[in-house]
Image (cartoon, rainbow, N blue to C red; front, side):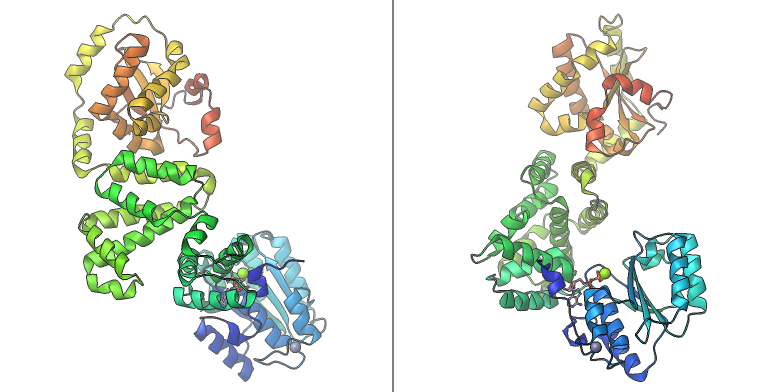
Length: 508
Ligand SMILES: Nc1ncnc2c1ncn2[C@@H]1O[C@H](COP(=O)(O)OP(=O)(O)O)[C@@H](O)[C@H]1O
Ligand SMILES: [Mg+2]
Ligand SMILES: [Zn+2]
C-alpha cells in the first residue's frame, strides 16, 4: 500500500523532530527523571508535530527497554504504537467522538490496568471538540487519575478548552515551523526520495504551507508524483494551481489606483484559471506584509528573505500606499483568509471582502452625504413622468436578465453587483424597488452612486421604453452565501420569502 509521504517521514526518534526544541528537551528530562505528569496538553497549529511527539512519548514510556528517551523501535510495544494498534496506547479523534458516552467509556477502561505495558496512554486529538458534558466527564478522570494513566490532549484551538481542564494539564505550545526549517527538511526528503526540485520551488512550498510541516510535505509529494523532470518554481506554481506573482503585483496595483474593473477582472481570473483562492489571499497577505514593513522601515528587508529584485520592486510600490491604507487592506485580507476555509463560498466571499477596498475615500464621503440627503427634487420629477405605469412587476422580472445583460456590456463590475439584488416591487410613487441582503450593504452603496444608478436606469428605459427610477433598500434577511441557493431562488418567490421583513431605506 502506498504510504503518504508525510506518514513515511514521521520522526521516529526525538532527534528527528524539527523545531519544538524546548518541548522535546522538557519531555526528555521528565522521562529520564521519571517525573511523568498524568495530563499533557499539546497546543498548536496543524502539522507541527503534536501527534508525532505524543506517539514518541508513548513509545518512550512503554518500550520494553524503557522508560527511555531512546525507545528501541523493535519491541512489540514500539512496533504496535507505530502501527497504531497497541492495546495500551489509544488514539481518539474527539472531532468524531464528541459525546459523554465515549468519555465515560474511557473512564471505565482507564481504571483497568494496562494490558501489557507500563502505562495506558490516551491521545485525544482535537480535544476542543468535546461537548460540555464530555469535558466534565474528562475532568473527573483528570481529578483523580489512576497511577498508570497518561493523557495527551492535542488541540489546534486551546482557547476553546475549559480552564478547569487546562489547569490540570502540563501545557506545551507547538510553534509554526520557520521557512528555513521546512526547506531543510524538504531538501532532505526530496534527496532521499529521488526528487529533482530547485531551491526556489522549495521556498515556494515553504511559503505556501505557512509553518505546517505536514502541508509542506504533502505539497512536495504532489509535485514529485506529477513530474519526473526538474521541478522549477514556475512548474511548481503550475502544478499546484497557484496564482503567479504577476497576479499579486497586478492586484496590488489595481488597489493602489482604486481600479475596480481591473480588480474585478483579476478576482474572476483566479476562479476561471482554477487557482486556489485561499492561496491567492495568502500570497496577497505576504505581499502586503512586505509592503507595510518596508514602508515603515526599509532596513527591515533583512528579515523578509527577498531577492534584490523583489526588494526594489516592492520598495517602489510602497510609494503608492499610505500606511493606513496598507493596514486597511491587511485587515480585510486577514479576515478573508480565515473565512475562506469554507471554499464553497469562495467567490462571493472574495468579492464581498475585496471590492469595498476599491471605494476611494472621496467616494465614501460622497456616499455618506447621499444617504443623509437623498436627491428628492430629481426623484419627484422622474416619478411624475411615469405616473401611469403601463408595465407590471412581472414584466420586469421576466426580462430582468436582459437588463443584467445590457448592463454587463457597459460595465462588467456593475452587473456583478446588480446580480445580487432582488427585484421586489414597484412602489406607490412609481419606483422599481431592488433589495440587497443585509450583509451586502456595501454593494447597495456602490450601486446607488449616481453614475451607476443612471446607467441601470438608462438600460431599463431602452428595454421597457419607460423611465423607471430605482430605489435600493436593504432586506432584513441575510442571504446564505451559497452559490447554488442563490441561483435556485425563483424571483417570484422572493416577495414571499421576504414578506414583512423589508425595512425602509435609512432605517438600516
Ligand atoms: N516538528 C516536526 N518535525 C518533523 N516533521 C514534522 C514535524 N511536525 C510535523 N511533521 C510532519 O508532518 C506529519 C504530521 O505531523 P503531526 O505530528 O501529525 O502533526 P499535528 O499532530 O501537529 O497536526 C508528520 O508525520 C511529519 O511528517
Ligand atoms: Mg495530529
Ligand atoms: Zn521498544
